Length: 440
Ligand code: ATP
Ligand code: MG
Image (tube, rainbow, N blue to C red):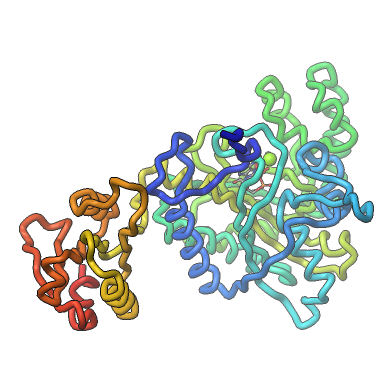
């Protein structure tokens, strides 16, 4: 036998729930249910779907996310196209590509736009639970709107999504909020930070020393426990915010207060991408260990200009789909039912044409029916077929046996209700009894 070829490390297969797997990754039924829920909540808020490429020119991310960020420094899958020498990158996030598309097609010429998409992103990180090299993001962006009204609306939208998914704010997920102010305010804060960390240079680790002049803000985001006390005493951006920035944050908070959404202002929340200003937020959970951020976003009023567009205010967020589904699983929340309504078992020597025609008619009437098709030897006896019917979760087995067929009938065998008896129904007219399968 030839060697098996395995998936790339850190990149996952999402499989049907009937497939047992050790790694506890969410199954495709949960995944699809999430997608349907998102679709409903977002269209309810006036967001339109779009798709952008998974591969983009490398400079898009170097310029957009920022040269001195973790993502650009060490997490991107970049290469040179062997055919034409183009510098290309697998997208490590989706916002920059969306902004590129908006600028390229002059989309905002006719006014603001709310868009969303969902798809794979790639980061070369150390794989662990909740952290992968290919993962999926839901990405939601409100473009051309200065806020603070839309900032608050976007945060409330996420709360609606939690509600639709069965998550409880406070118990399962919490909101953290901050303002990154405007570029001039950040420059003043940055200068104060550099001065402070210069004073304590001997206590910094190598990573932080390297960042001291390239990106001192990222030191605040360090995951090194030895740096925590130093970081905690560092000058805060809040001390450097002007009246307008403070008012913007206050206006967002006023709406959240009025809507009864609890939050914590976290002055240390800086986010790992350089393009943010004013409102930034994260939704975090205590149920996923150190991979606790399920959703993060903020305002990026400068990004359009950085990418060659006209000045355009915008805000958005990215949500990690694997993490969110792992959270739903960890909480043991009820998952959607992917079971068929009926499972067709077919006796030996029974002619296939009338069976398939009957199943087709049932589906036309709206019934979800799964047919037991002959596979490997030993899958075929009526008894083993009925076992599979039971395992499928269907409420009824449809028994197409030779005896039933001789009477022009099919048997409906209830699988979930031990007290209910099997009944015969006319094989030729499934539409007259399809309703019985749909009930319940
Ligand atoms: P973290 O601090 O956990 O690395 P991040 O700030 O890098 O997260 P963002 O760039 O804000 O993450 O991406 C948005 C969301 O995508 C995160 O909140 C998280 O849920 C998810 N995410 C980020 N990196 C990964 C990864 N490597 N694997 C799975 N999900 C991820
Ligand atoms: Mg990260």
